[in-house]
Length: 95
Image 1: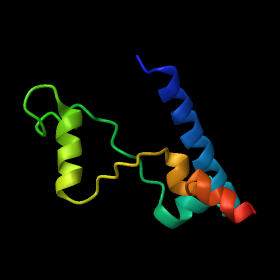
Image 2: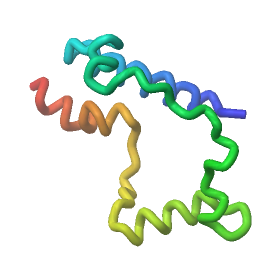
Image 3: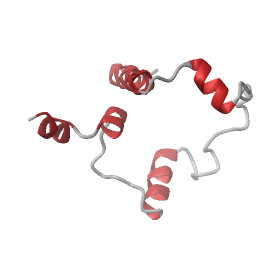
Image 4: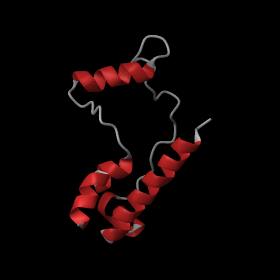
């Protein structure tokens, strides 16, 4: 079961994405016109990361893959930070 923090972060991520889309003036119709109205595949039975790790430690295997590819960011952060910039950077721009 997801934690309250996870639910809060998910809701925050959705809010950020909606803000970005509305700020750029995009609507569902615009996206369908640009990319088509193709339906996505809902069959997710064979999709997963089970082959990535031995045993149940997928998280460690995923981090190792990111580190090996030079994509691991130890600083962490939220999706909002990624989209809107770090809080400290936003504060400095506002001043």
